[in-house]
Image 1: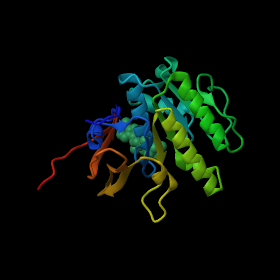
Image 2: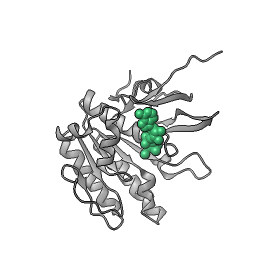
Image 3: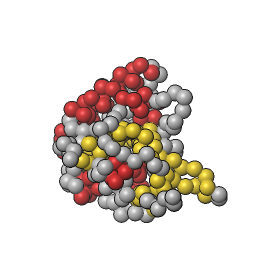
Image 4: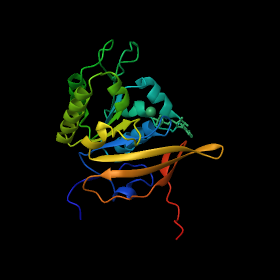
Length: 244
Ligand SMILES: Nc1ncnc2c1ncn2[C@@H]1O[C@H](COP(=O)(O)OP(=O)(O)O)[C@@H](O)[C@H]1O
Ligand SMILES: [Mg+2]
């Protein structure tokens, strides 16, 4: 019996890969190429958390506007706006170098026009978490966040500080990242307690998705690569029978 609270992702077929769920307060990186399904993974985790598990969530949007995000997920039948109005979700607009007025109203917004200091972002994230009692957080994405800063050391320090602050809040966090396995292991892979990798590769005349858990501190997890489907219901992990 584990002595910690398990956080179910709500992504069909995923939780059984990680002994039932993440550990509450853990920070997990979900990495994969563009179009692999990272944003969907993040939103499905937040949406299901808020709707089915009574765990409010904060989404930090760095690459898309909150309006775009809400609109994209309507196609899945997910009413993000409703959750925002019910105080179960906050979308923080943290896009750098963009000035767009009009639909900021219920969402958080940072001053834009220059890179956002890391501390400023962390403070905004923490105050949003407190405001709705968030238990889940998604940052979309670390790659876009890191693009704003030229100093590697600054990024690593900021990231480490953020991970500590989030763990302190007992908020289970998913940091999305475009990095793939390479010689230079990205900083976020070793400052966080978990790494999940999404693959999106050519198969014949189409592309196929699959997913694997690379590491997850303190949790027994599958080492296998599982096929993953993305359709109008969102993501689903398949468990095909393995031939002997
Ligand atoms: N209803 C749908 N059915 C099937 N695939 C979809 C649907 N909606 C979006 N997608 C696919 O999801 C992809 C985007 O996924 P996303 O989570 O944004 O990826 P990432 O964040 O990794 O770039 C789109 O490029 C598209 O191929
Ligand atoms: Mg994305």
